[in-house]
Length: 157
Ligand SMILES: [Zn+2]
Image 1 (cartoon, rainbow, N blue to C red):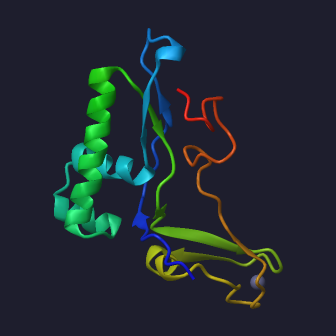
Image 2: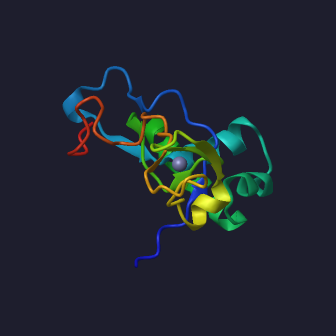
């Protein structure tokens, strides 16, 4: 079995998943794509003003990894700002600090912490052992799955 990419913990999602500059014709528009964990790194470091060590802890990554995510995010934002590019926020390898699961058979609901999900997603209901369980969906925005503004698919901006 392929080893899954290491998950980063993202506690908060931005309100808007797409930004575009005014006055740039659509056919000339270029864009950058930020992952949800890149946005989270900006939120923790630049908006909340936390130390890198704290940011890394919150995202459950090493400090060098956090630094790499942050640098990548800042570089893309600078590129968009200076060169007048659109910004799309979507995708990444992340999970919430905890996610609520629901059993379709008996309606039982329970919380699963990040640390558990990072190892393995739960396979059955802890109460009735049914495998018929589902996580509460992540906010639909920004995950790049089948909704959007027509610029998805071909990476057209
Ligand atoms: Zn159940």
